Length: 168
Image (cartoon, rainbow, N blue to C red; front, top):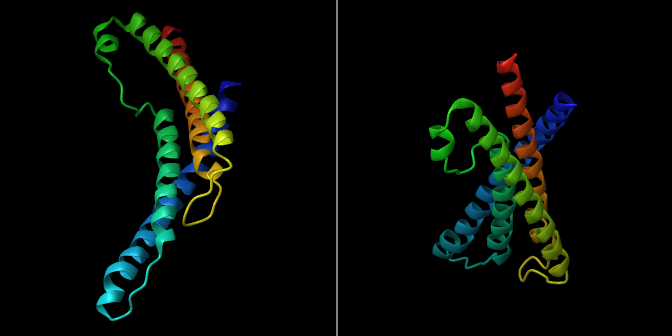
């Protein structure tokens, strides 16, 4: 079961990494377009404006941050204070690390639930430039946090398997 779950999450993370890359590439293209339109075209005597590019880049950045955080959770790369874990002997250290990962997964699940509530609450709002429902912006939090919870659980399960393998 653990290997199936790990494989499933890793495949999902591969797709998410591609989406993150496309999001970053799109942000660069949008901001480059905005700089060109705002600063270069007026110098050529062609004043113009594209306010939607800033908003689109900002919304993409929110999605990239939440999805990137979820990927970081899979590899244990989120910021952490590990002084106590490192100071303990091996067995209690592994136990405390695993407990911390399960607690973190629970926090991510709570954030996903509250994020979903916020998404539903703000679904009637419309973005000023894109005229897009804010549902799509707010959806980044529950999706990113749910994926972070799944990645953290897989990391905790892998830590448990590593402990069992060294004990045998």
